[in-house]
Structure formats: C-alpha cells, structure tokens
Image (cartoon, one colour):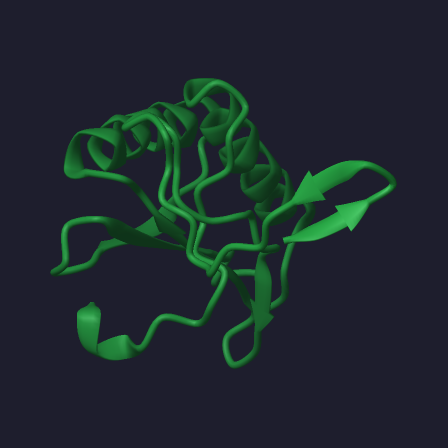
Length: 128
C-alpha cells in the first residue's frame, strides 16, 4: 500500500473481476485495420453468453439500419465475438465501414450502461 498525500492506494493484479455481473471485464481497445483484404477487426469479451447474445442481436439491427453487413464470429468459449467489417467490392476501407465500427461501439456502450467490454489482448485464432 502506498500513501499518496494522505490517501491510501492499493495495487491489484489484473485482470480485475467486476463487482457486478452486468459489468464487462476489460477496457476498450480500438479497431485494428488489417490488409489483404482491407478490413476493420475488433474482438469483444463479455461476462456471459446472455450479454454477448444481446449485443449480437443489436448488431443485426444495425446491419439492417445501415444496409451494411459485418462478419460476426462467435468464439467456442461462448464469451467472445470478433467483428470484421469491410466492403469487398471497394477493395479499400470505406466511410461506411468506419461508421459501422463507430456505431457498433456506441451500441455496446449504450446497451451496457457505458461500460466497455472488449478484449485488450489479441485473442488467438484457436478459439474461433
């Protein structure tokens, strides 16, 4: 424990478990831009499958609203999804791809009371 100007601070080991079940587990990472083909990729980690499923159904609604599709991959662990966004016909990332990514982040933040829940580290391909 460190005394910082009269305030006691304790350091804990990561990852920190949530105090409530509806709170996601990890801080938010940014979308990763991949090449060949050009695409945006982000992996989300959820506390449980119920939380994950709620978000996936919100993504389906977003696809319909924006008339743009994402590849949504559910991990075998049940608590992770990977979203891949691209416009194959364009061959490059489009403004629509970037808008979809932003709206997906907004949907998540709104649906889980402003908490982020994406995996901070690169998740190995063997869980997909």
